[in-house]
Amino acid sequence: MNVILDAREELEPELKVFTENRVKFSLKRLFWMVRKIKVRYSAAPSSKTTCNQHCMVSLETFDHHQIEVSMTARDRRMALEMCLKKIYKLVQKAFHKSQKYGRFSKHVYV
Image (cartoon, rainbow, N blue to C red):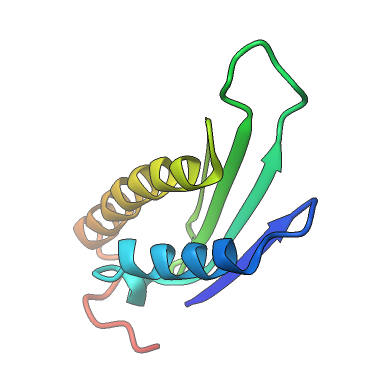
């Protein structure tokens, strides 16, 4: 599983390490199904609300499903957490659907 970080401004090293570890931990049960994950952080222009940090997570599974989720929160860590929670549910759903229709084997070798 490749984790690719993308941001418009420079990310601090602690956030990079946190992001990689959190992504790998959240998808540890389904990591064999994911080919690559791209995490993009951005900040919204100053808005009237305090939620101005965007996180977009897109991934590609081994059966070439593209899943993309975007969330906005107060800080980047919370936005990442919300994205990963939604991504996990969508990956599980894609896995069960693929198994049901016989498009995906139980044993995929990385």
